[in-house]
Figure 1 (cartoon, rainbow, N blue to C red):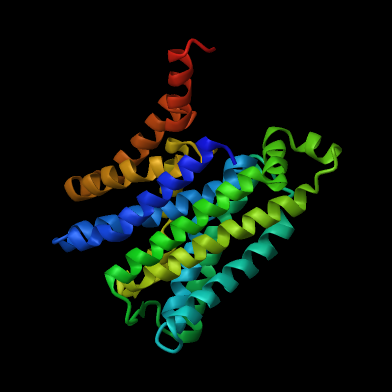
Figure 2: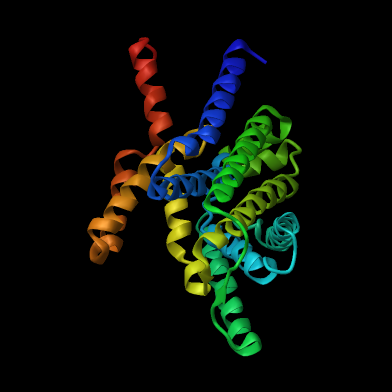
Length: 309
């Protein structure tokens, strides 16, 4: 490990420790709630980039796993210890991701995008059908002895885990294989890379983090129904945050999540009737003016400053 990488790990550890202590100085619950939203999207965007960053597979299925995790908490939260609930959520995300990955990751390009969006809607409709026809009650109340501080610390730990995993994978042969797949999947197959194995492995890991995030966030709402747990805007916001920061960079999704959560919070509070229109405009501006993300922009700027092409 180079000196630069050691310094980066040390700096990241200090930042995470600082964030762990930050709630002690917060006197207003609003700011704690805002930090929870930021951490939630940091985890979701980094999890999304764990698979989609190197492979360049654009997935809109984030909310399918997020909502699945939320419903695991709603169903088992009052019956089992919290650790068991999170374990069930991780197992559910793992099982669904394996089935989906093994059967569909041969798709690529626009076909995979369409499928991932359809998957999210399919899971939502299946949950809705089950609630209406079996439980006879569309919504569920979530009464779990989990405080806002508990949610904050658990999301922070989850963010540390996914960032650490992403850094380790980037340095491994698996990370190299995924980057080759992203550049040209046909070439990857010809040089002996088991593309299906690599993609399924990372897709599953990404889905597990998303599912556990949904399970952790469920107590924050107290009441959930399919329209809340499976809101499509979660997938789109996760995607645009990762793209803004730069899905290929380790901290890119975090760089994109923080400013956009603050922006969306402001727009939702001051322009609630026009939020969807403004959200669409933000997407267009980011895709058009920052196609390589903030991390790519800073890299190009530093190279120009040093006189490099």
